[in-house]
Image 1 (tube, rainbow, N blue to C red):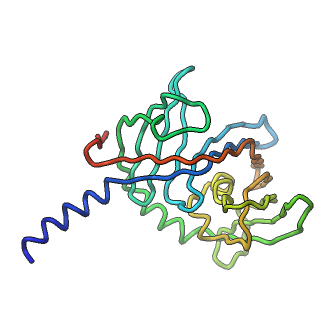
Image 2: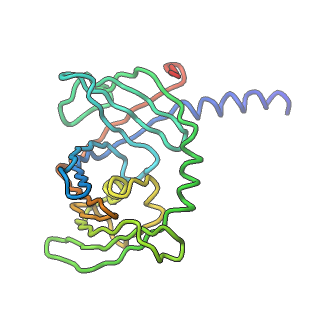
Length: 227
């Protein structure tokens, strides 16, 4: 038995850091934030996700005018993997992502645990529309008894083959694990939303969705950690 213990730890380490990630959808959203009726702050968010696994995602950032990089965040293992993109033509492929380095994000697990205790939501179906659209009222409350509203939103979902509602809801409510708080009977994708919280108003619009089918593998041999 004593001889098996070191092997166990070796294989556990390899399983932890030899990860293969599959991606099947690219989504682009436009987020507008207005404070005190001032000029809207507009940002576009691009994500590549796995519709069957909510524990990781790819986001993008611009390094320069002609250079784009990608960040693969693995929430389950508290890691971020950084890549250069050598080709941005769609559909993307795994070989387009050139590994640079990884970063540990140890605070993520504790953050999620704390948020889960203090985030309270209620979703209500208001009506169904032509074109397989569903209009929901989604409210976040600051207390478990749901007496005090923190944010109220009107959200339109479109029926979809896979469940991608979590992508837009994360952006709207700034809460990663919102899929644990709000459940829907049917698969869907957030098409548009408007929300209000105190002196802030929000708008979220789906600009693009593209099916993808590629894998990225990060193995132990190539890992380079950056502080």
